[in-house]
Every structure is written in structure tokens, then in C-alpha cells.
Amino acid sequence: MIENEELDQWISEFHPTVETDVLEVLRARVQYAILDQLNYMISGQVGSIDEIKKIVLQEITEITNESIEVDID
Image 1 (cartoon, rainbow, N blue to C red):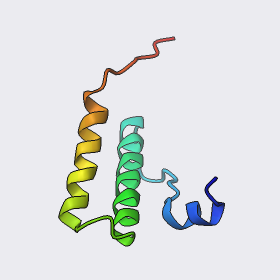
Image 2: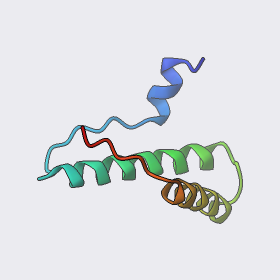
Image 3: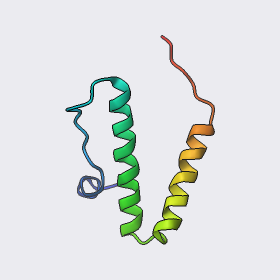
Image 4: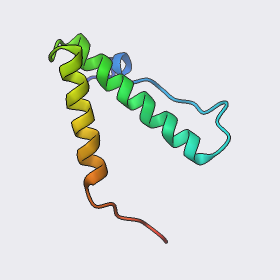
């Protein structure tokens, strides 16, 4: 299990303050998550910055290409 201290070090907390709608909040959360992942991977020397960017972009592409289930309840 991951220790809370490690999570606190690498995961930014997001508290909406200036966003005006739900879509802006969702976009900001995604941005924070991507930046946290990039920072974590760069600090762990997973690869060069360009290699890490390619890995993250590939992951984003895979996520967006998967079928999306919509909960309309």
C-alpha cells in the first residue's frame, strides 16, 4: 500500500476557485493529474523528458479511445 506521505508529495490537491462551470473543473483536474504524473516520472528518471511525454500521451490516447460508458440515471 502507498504511504500517505508519498501521495501527499506527488498528488496535487485541487480546490476549484475561479472555474465557472463543471467542464472547467474537470479540465483543471485532468491538467493537475497529468502534471503530477509528468513530475513523478521525471523525478524517478523513468526516461528522458521527451520519452516520458510520449508515454503519457500514449496513455491519454488509450484512455480516450476506449469505449466510454455514460451513466444517464
